[in-house]
Amino acid sequence: MLPDNWNEFTADQRNSWLRDALKQDLSITFTKVDGTERTMPCTLRADALPPQPVTDNKKPKIHKPETLSVWVLDKNEWRSFRVMNVTSVERLRAF
Image 1 (tube, one colour):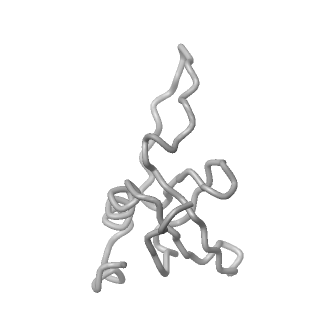
Image 2: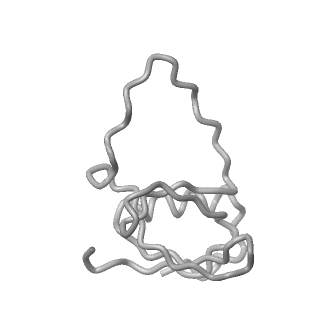
């Protein structure tokens, strides 16, 4: 499902493409920092995310194009990965 020119994408382009693709549930395979491979069922669908906590002194998040935080469907937790280490993306049928 990755574009043919995926290897030519910058970190910012990969981050943007993945954010758009994660409007549906995906299985993303990437190489972890320790060199092992991980396949993670994840999403950024608004209806699948946990409610945002209400806080008065919320600091704005700094955009880091080299990493992406996603909601992991099998763990029900937020996790992140380096976008330059993504090797495969597949659409999940149902979770």
